[in-house]
View 1 (cartoon, rainbow, N blue to C red):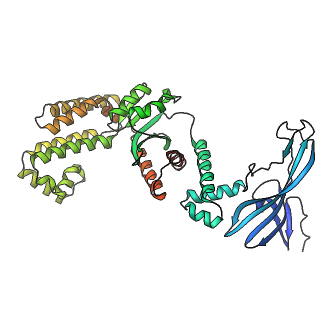
View 2 (view 1 turned 30 degrees about the vertical axis):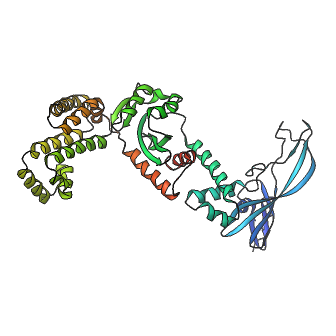
Length: 409
């Protein structure tokens, strides 16, 4: 058997087991002098072994004036609480003549807990454990946990926020609360992350935020639904960007007006949920039995058949993607012809559809050229809904904004 390894300022011997101080404390430049358990709590006596210098002038010529023992909460060992007993010294700087209490890495001034304990509490809170349960388990107040968690989220959100505005931007709205209404999500579609969340969805509520942004000239493409308010904001603050309509919302508008027209022509048949499902689907997604049933209904209602065929051709035209400029010009000709037919139609719902498509014809034509859409933003909205459900509703929008930045970046 070989001899025991030599003890250094980084190790201590307990029984026959040699333990590294950094592995026990989890902080550098600390020496563990004793470990004991009392009243279900682990007490670790440590002292700082690093260099000490004046925080005011940086001078290392110091004279010791006083000392005291600090008790600090540290990250728990399993279900047992841990406390650090740290000797701290009051120094007098020979260079500038100022007094100061010694500062330690991993422990903020005037704090009764280490940064590792703060982080462990905040991560448990972030994982969904309620503040009241954490307060009872760790024997600290709920207000203290809330203060730590707010600072933790702000720090993480600041680290994850990119200073540059995204080149491919997705804009969409989502519901926040009954009291504060809707919020607008700005999504970086190129890097698949949320850039920011702003309260409000009107031009007035977003004007102040967009007016202060820097680097807006970097935005080349903006994906959005058929919102006139968002379109006017984009044209004003991102004049060099190309607006691309979201394909899902365009086809949803087409189906909405088509179903309204169907309701006018056949009020009874439009209430049949089976037929409603067949009418809304694309033709290639129907089974042979469904094809037969739909053909039988259209044969019984000849007025609906040309409208249904027109709707299918229009949807398949809107589903085109990944085309060059020459192909887009041919598709644009077909789109303008379809819009002209809709605007000349005697049915009110189809005429309204034609007016809507005519107003958004340039943004719809851009769908065939660019591949990005707002599906990424909608996916992040699902994550935001999960965050709100886990918290049983969020009232502080700034905390919600920081949490979204951390979770969706």
